[in-house]
Length: 75
Image (cartoon, rainbow, N blue to C red; front, side, top):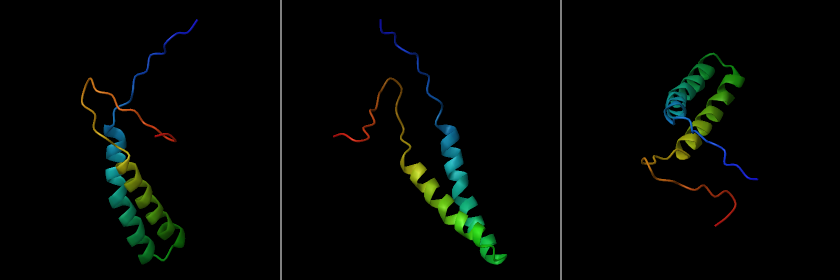
């Protein structure tokens, strides 16, 4: 017999805050990495910046009592 599983989604405020704080953090990594000439820090800056921008593009606002469907490999 099939049973439905209860799903409670997490709030989107935490990922939004992480992504928004990650952008200035990435800029600081790039700046301080170039000042102190540490290549790993200089490389980590653009990677963090790219991941934060991609993360911000994936966030969407959904009104209460509405649903959105995410299709990964479909039409």
